[in-house]
Image (cartoon, rainbow, N blue to C red; front, side, top):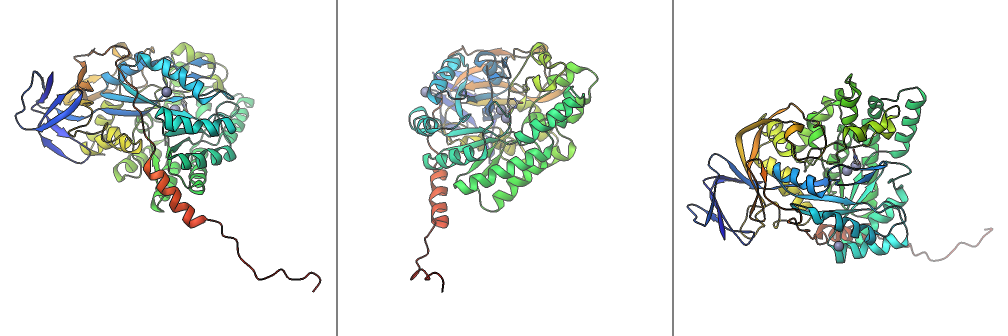
Length: 484
Ligand code: DUC
Ligand code: ZN
Ligand code: ZN
Ligand code: ZN
C-alpha cells in the first residue's frame, strides 16, 4: 500500500517547503508536488516533521524500592499520542550482574512497545566482566551508548576511577559515554544535614541538589572524557553552570552534548514550595527544577546550539508511590513524566514565543539526537529512504493538559492545566498511522528495536588524542654517577 501525506508543509532541521510525502514499505519513497497513492492523509494547514525521538526514558524502571509506573505499553502509547515515534530506555544491571543478562530483561520488557525503541546500557559497577561485556554490547547488541550515574551514592553511582576506565573502554569501542552529572557525595552529605535539621519535606530534595553540584560534576565528567579521548553526552542539563561547562568544552574543540528536559525548561523551583505535600512530591526529580536564571540559560543554549536535545527523562510514579517518602524526602521516588507533552510544550513555550524556530524545534526533538546516536537518516529525517516516522503537527490545534485524558498510567500530570498548541494530527510509525483523533492504532509489540552502530567520531577522536598525548620516554645519554 502507498500512503500520501497531502497538502502539508514539510519542516526539517534546515528546510521549510510545501510538498506531499509518499510512503511505501515503511519508508519515504518520494517527496514532491501532487503525489498520488491509495491512502491519503490530509495535512492541510499542518507541518510534516520527523517524528520525535526521546533519548531519555525510564519505563518500568526498578528504582528506589519500586518500579516506575509507565511500562513499554503505556509509555510508548504516551509517546505516539505526543508525536514521538522512538524512545531510548536505559538498561540497568544490578551491581555484580552481567550486562548481557540485564539486557535480556530489558529485551523482554520492550516486547510490549507500540513504537520503535533502543537502549542505552548503564555502567552501574565495574570489573573485568563489565570491561569484556561492553564489547559484546556494542558489537552484538546494537548499543553504542553507556550511561554513568555520578549520583545515587550506594546504589547506581560510579566513582571517577570507574568512569575513567569505562570512558576509555568506550573510546576503544566507538561508543559514547553518557553521564547523570551531580556530585553524589555532596548530595548525600547535604541530605543527611537537612534531615538532621528536621527538614524532611520535598523542598529539601531541591535544597540537597543545588546547581553547583551539577556544575561541578559536569565539569569533572568533561575532564575525564577529555583525558580518555572520548566525546560526552550530558543528560538532563538543568542549570547555567552545567551549560557553561558544556559550552566551554565545545569551544575548545570537544564533542560534548547537553540535553535539557522539557520539565526544566518550563517548570521552576517554586513547585517545591507548594503547600500541598503531594503537589511538591510529584515534582521531585533529579536534578530538581531550577529558577528563571537557569531556565533562560537553557533556552539560550538551544537557540545558540550549545545545547542540542530536548528530552523528558520520563520516569513516572503514582501519588501512592511518591507517598512512601512522607517524613523522609530521600525516599520519594525521583522522577516525573513528560513523554506525551514534550512536543506540544516545546512548541508552545519555544516556537510560539519565538525562543526557537520551527526548524530548531525539529533539530532538538529529533534530528540532532538521531545524528548523535548514529541512526541518521534512518530516523530523524524527512528524506527519501528514511523510515516514515513522521508527525503531522497542527499548529492551530490546542488542548489543556490533563491527567484525565493522558495515556500515561499515573494519576496526575506535572503540566496539569497548561494550555498548549501544536498537537499531532497524525503520528506515523514506519508508515503506519499510529495515532489519529485521540486514538492509538498500534498494538503492543509493533515497535521494533533500533540497532545503533558504533559512533565514527569516537574512534577518530581517540586516534587524534593518542597522537597528542602519546607518552614519549625521554632518551638521555647516561645516568650521573652518585656522590659526585
Ligand atoms: N532522575 C530522576 O528524577 N529519575 C530517574 C533517574 C534520574 O536520574
Ligand atoms: Zn539484544
Ligand atoms: Zn539521571
Ligand atoms: Zn534518567
